[in-house]
Image (cartoon, rainbow, N blue to C red; front, side, top):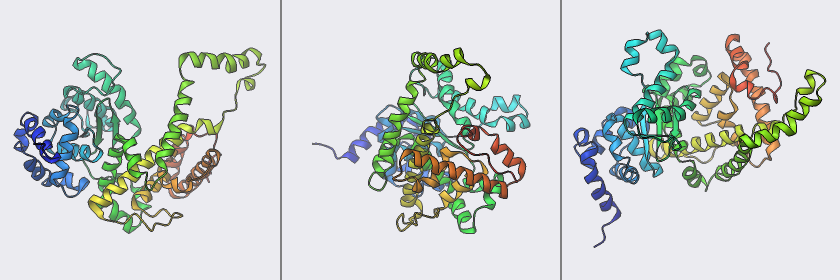
Length: 410
């Protein structure tokens, strides 16, 4: 007699739960559900926990052998991992950012505060290695130190993120979250951003900000599945595929043999015939330069839309229809807009995507250029001059400086 799918899941997971985390959860799906429901950190990010969440998550993690990892996570981390894995149908490991006890004993509090992101990534690389996780599939070796080096290479991208990030590995995705809530973080650590939000938006960020953040990172773990999920209401899936092809074509020029050829054909020729320093300067194609930024923006937008949909379904119940396409209305996008004023970076300007739809590549670029200039104008009026100067000299600005006009400073 063939067992129904839910029964098959129970048979698989019951046998594995005993070795995965029976000590923490009692070894049953029902006990998992009750433990997860009792965690404020979990409920704040996922809403109500039902048995189906646990079943789907366990099934997704068991398929790749990732289930035993749960037994070495904190209760809140394990619950978030299971629910996230169930939502996207593949293994997701969620961890809260932290600093190792060794670092706390050896480094002063001031030193840790100044290099917190570095110490947190180092601790995460070690912790994942202890769990047997190797995020970089091309890195050979099964020793603990090899896994640390491999994980460190992948996690290096987390330096760009102030709070949370997703690192996609060979067989699973790791999400690093801050333990404190998004609302508390913005209110206490980003006062200028907080001051740009209205009362309704502030309330929404306090109530749902952590959930939007969490599900945004989950969306990064499975962009293809997210694109398929959103395909009925969004063109982002097709855009993602299109930009990915262009990104890969651009990356081909970075290969050693291609780079050498380009040097010989372009820079080498200029060098041989140059009569002054000005002759060595090229004229970059701003559209080609910004294809990478466009691609990253589309990925961010996909993750945002996925988060908006999941949070609406699981927590808030807000309708996603009847929105004015000419206004930034959703509190998450209002927060994104405030962040863009505080720290302009075109890759994260997801609030602008409605104005990019159905436009050709060069016009999309011009919209982003105009928006960036507008952000710098607003920043000059709303922020202290030292902060504006920092934005002007930031990495994000230099990524754009060849194509953007100088920001107003008066």
